[in-house]
Picture: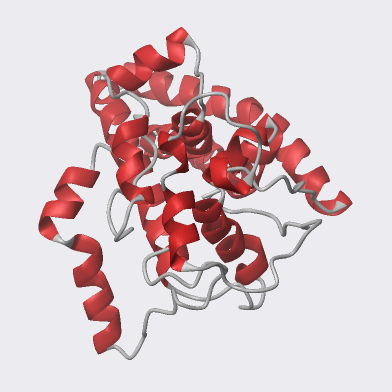
Length: 280
């Protein structure tokens, strides 16, 4: 997944046909290849250049700047309100709750993009579905993306949410609303950071600090995420920290959700993508 919400990608070299299954299996395991491989499809790199339209690039950069500007006062006033109401203890609950919710939302979007719609679906096809599915062919491409291209698309969605949160804090002094606002703000931050953690999980040589965070499972751990890139490609959708993956796998949450949607007449369309694999 290149981003939770990704702008259309202009590829210098479009693939003319679906690759054979053997090639897909080889690419799916690209993260396990030895260090130092050259940027080729076999090593998980496509060699293609991702470009945003000028309008989308403006949105990415502007919302990436606005996000911290809105995040700080939301956190400050939420804490201040909870302190005034002697409910500051709720802040200790808000932090892990926000991380879990962020992990779940990211996993839900990831599953939906892997399972439904197609690359030709209007609006969401080129903007969301295509980048998700191309990531399974070229998982290390995310390592070549800039910081703004990774977080900017999520910031486009997060900035309006934080704006509403700040408005709620402005017009009401209710303690539970302050708690909800704090949870939402921290969850938005976790969601924005998701693709940074995702990028780290695909890096060949992450820094010592990143490796420490991965070992402690505060962020997505590479071997944990590698399961998602291994046949049958139907587990480990959560990519913020992956905390929920064991529970969702054990309960068959996403398969049951697919069965429910199938009952409603909504069929998976994950064969209609660039790699033509039933679980990518």
